[in-house]
Length: 118
Image (cartoon, rainbow, N blue to C red):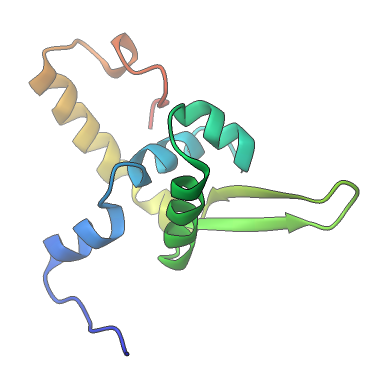
């Protein structure tokens, strides 16, 4: 079955960033060049292994993150934002600033210790 092309920008946004964990994963990856799976899981807290794996695969499939395998002893994998993922950060910063004002906070650092300044 072939995928149909999404023509509505809002549907595209929802497909790309919808769900509970995609935006927090992008937020975690925005503060550093790369993170190992376990570091992402630790920063997100209550995400399950299955949900983290699925979300990472979807973000990689959409071209927002890169998965780098290191074939050394011991082997490991690191995740980082792709160029496409980095291009979305200004949009997320604007959205976060809007949310901060709506929530009645002075700035994002006042309440969000999981995410970094985008």
